[in-house]
Length: 421
Image (cartoon, rainbow, N blue to C red; front, side, top):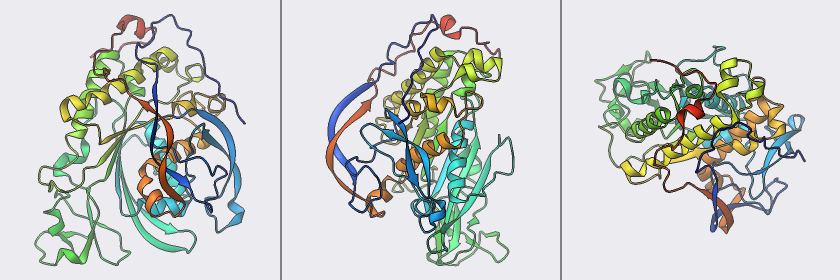
């Protein structure tokens, strides 16, 4: 087993008053492995959420294509103390994501998790841009690697919004252009973009023409077409740039992030979308552990200190919990948090710059998110799990997290330069 090592905070700066994690023991429906499930931990349920779970780095035998035994190998795997993550094969990822449309809006930390998922589906996937600090849409062909049959598509939109100061709900710009598709039913053809119409009931009246364009005047029945959803999932990630190059201070970051999350939850539908359509599920990725002493840039070294990380994570938590004050519920926002697995000596050896992680850690971060994205598929269609009630310890957010940061801005700023605007 690879033991967990937590770095001590040494800076002479006050710590967040609410940084202590709050846990409660409860009993709830959980997914337990069936007898034929290949997991070595038959008595452990799947983790019930995408929050950070304490554990250890260990090894598992893993094969992304079980039909080909030559791909089987031992890989580092994060094993939480009380639960586990399903290790998705390439085919299983495709079966879960079939005909879904996912928006990823954020920085390089979340983009790298998305890239890992895309390369898990298609090992040769490449964005075609080494820096990849831009918006890009990808329609991914899904293959059943066991039968070598085409299954369908999944659509991803990556939107480069690394800072709270540049964030906007881009997915609704231009009336929702470029976010929904039609495809003839029963066809394996590439989905056709609907043009500059919102992806709603009006958009479903459009039919593709022979040249791949959209015919706004077609009388062809919409029952002859499959329609991709507008989007069923939105994932956000903002924080690392606002700690460093876009640093305006902790409290300004907290208030602007709260506004960004409000903008997101307020724009899960277009105005013309039927109210009966399900709302998209929202994930927000908290900062994972940053190793500032390994940073290759002085700004990151001075700005990504342990104490500043704790304060920025606290600001992220407070912003998330502020949502009920405006919307009455947090049912549509989930936390994607990998702090425990990255706050380890093993993860420390897997970062070239103190910020981003190499493939082994990125792979496990992607598995955590897939376990959340595919929870219903794992329960209802995988055939590998059964749902029954069981004991679990879950993490809660402090109810007063909507209050101000209660931080000494000068002390928290430390040696990190403040951007002037």
